[in-house]
Amino acid sequence: MDPKRVIKLILNHLKDALSSSEAIELEEWKSGHEKRSELISDISDEQKLSKELSEFSKVDAEKSWDQLLSRLDVKSHSSSIFMMRFVRVAAIFIMLLSVAGAIYLFIPQNNKVLVSDAISVEPGAYNAVLSIEGEDEILLNDTSTAELKRDNKLLASVKHGKLNYASDGKISSTKMLLIVPEKAEFQLDLSDGTKVWMNAGSMLSFHHPFDANKREVYVEGEVYFEVKPDKTKPFIVDVAGKNAIEVLGTSFNVKAYPEDHVHEAVLVEGSVVWKTAIGRERIMEPQQRLTWNSNTSDVEIENVDSNIYTAWIDGQFVFESTRLEDIMKPVSRWYGVNIEYDAEDIKNMPFSVDVKRYEDLQTILKMLEATQKIKFELKDTELLISRK
Image (tube, rainbow, N blue to C red):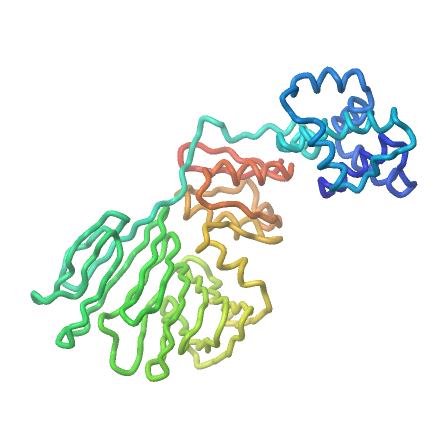
């Protein structure tokens, strides 16, 4: 039940103003855990409340009360002065619980998080490895600086991890390979001005300069593109050697990890054509997700909210009613942990998540454990998931 709804029901209970339907709602909520019934009993005891509130003497109670009344539309001219004072104490207490996280209200208190607070798994960092034909590998990060040459000619320079391409017309086309390992991410511009974001465990291969009549790149992993429009040169993405995406100028996300049998594209804006190796073509429209199944060669398109699939470039993990396995795969790559499941059916359990991906791993694990459906055991980089 929504936390705001619970608080409203409790306030109405304290004022003896519960309707019959609200009383049923409150009873159903209380029956979810014995601690909830204890809470209702505790906040009905004015003396006990006063004792609890003494610990929060620094709180501006009058201001807090006025703000709460405004939000809940409670009339300040109640006929019962005693009841108004009683509700005031209870409301402030509930507000204080809310400030503390409202854990006592909405999550059973016997929920012991099995992931030790002493264990810290940091998120990925900003780095990648760039290699050029016939040249050594170069580590790219926020501080790296270098010059990239081929046959004694400058191809590009690197300053603070950013690629700056040489524009000498005499430069021969050279293949570049950019690898973003697990626990990493990277952002770059291609020589045509196309912007690229690369997620953990991804690879991008491209030429500088591009061919005269097309711009072609090869992708494995998860990559987001904002393609620079150029009607004379279509932009073509070779998706893990299995399919191709052709565009002129648009924004889209591609996810095609070699170990996954389903590859996908999510179109944010513009228009793209998905081409399979056997000659099938599908045109995508904005806010659509196309999936290709390597086992069956089936291609499916559905309407989606593209923000969910591109949230990672803005530093968020966002999933809505998503299979646990599909949540934990990107989490595994981003935090560099290996996932094991105690039972196969756990993989299909649906969850919704919206959390910053720069938090410690425990933030996500505790959020999932709070559902009382699963638990985690983390040892070094091995994460075991079992049913609660």
